[in-house]
Length: 519
Image (cartoon, rainbow, N blue to C red; front, side, top):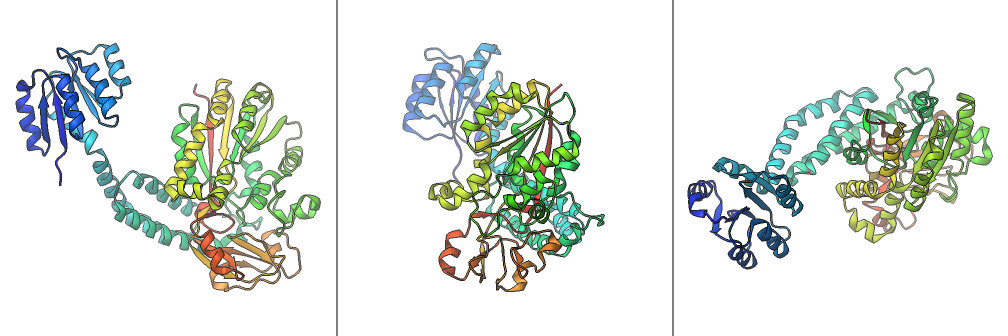
């Protein structure tokens, strides 16, 4: 293995020989020089892993040398060593992007710690993370084997997501492979759990039912409304729990997170069904019966299937909190987001503001259709990072900041998630069968029953049907449902895309976060 190569620049370098011998013994290749001019020449000619730079030198000063080194090699880490603790000097050095700052007289172990921090950090992080996951692997496996309630699955999903994000920071492909295998086993067990219990959950008398889409407004959002203290409900469409955990670290600089909970999406896990249930407070079958003009048959194109959310929310609010002053807004792009921010004074006059941000859903669809987005979001990690980048650069942080400045509150949630599909499952259907990849509905569906969760009587799941013989089937794990016509073509096209509508932890287990201004 190549030794890390260090350039140490100090006009009293001979005094530092004991330090150099110590570091050489620790496996570092140390090259030295005594002035800034020689140092910049060496940086031009050689490749170094890190530079130790004395701030106070005759001729070219340490700060001037630092600037020249950064012009030659912008990514080269530089550790500044100085006798002065003057704040303005520190500000200048930090502004020039130093990697670390040491005060003379330095001890050999201080320098060693700085080298390890800057050169070995990735390796040390990998070792710590992989050791931690190894220690918890058997515990998580036991949790999966023992899971009998949705609460058990919430705990499992939290742990798996935590380690997925932690192992993102490491460079151990073997450990990531072990995690993927454990996730796969969990996905299969969760699918079996849902297929066994889902219809029971929808029974009003079933005590172990989780909080589901059609109860979110009545049980969580509306009870949190306080007169004179505005509440902003921010629903980010199609945001998975792991994507929320990527956004979460950006929140404390804006507001205080006072709580977090999980809830369960109804099936199908799509906007048409899950989000309409959220805002109406009733199941899709009831919507189609009470408001048939506002329920679009599933075999129609996706366009127009969620255009009545404001009407649904209005009816729910009027029968639950009749005198509530509220507003509803759907944001599809940054321009619309900025317009909302410009209306903050008006929004603050309401008791409740419902804001639906569509970016993550648009991103998942764009990844399917656009080769560029597929290249940017090649895997789950990249997909999460794109979501975080969107949040940081969107108008949403500014909105949250303004809400906090006016002592208002925020609840962030979503309507469903998505899963990266891998395995095509063949289905036969007619013209009126739905086009979705994670679930299908129709009257003449043919499929292998063991590969799906089938509901032969949609009314039992409070789902509308277009025909007396219609049924619903749902994809499990990472499967996706492809019609027999041009099967190979579509199976190839949609493999490794993010889809929703079926049964998985990623699609069904959803975050709700409570934010309040910092007091």
